[in-house]
Amino acid sequence: DARTITQMTVPVHRLPRRVHLGKGYVVEIVLVGPRKLAELLDEDDTVYDGFFESSFGDGKVAGRICINSRLPIAKKWATYWHELIHAVNDISAFDNQPGGLIT
Image (cartoon, rainbow, N blue to C red; front, top):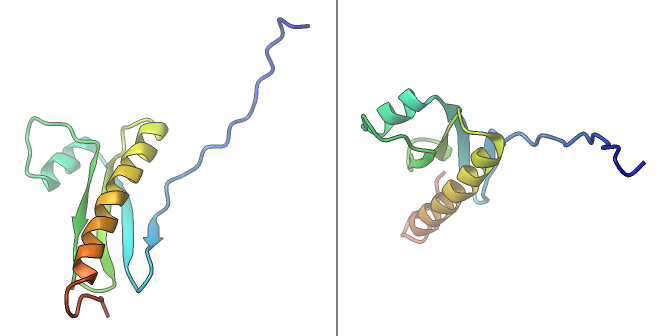
């Protein structure tokens, strides 16, 4: 019958916890609540979806992407992709400096 709607199971793709970008560069991905996100950004009134924080020279992790845990999964993924671009740009600029490779 054309009026019958069939339910489909749509897989939910979780965000990765880490991304290896080559040459030893690793970016961690963490979900944080809106208050913690505001605290990390030193903001009081503004709600952010996420941000990339570099940590070059602090070990093997080149930085972390923090994403608002209250976002719907589609928005989390959009924020992840957006912040990953920032991470790649920052890491590329760092890596192109003399002695840029994290060891």
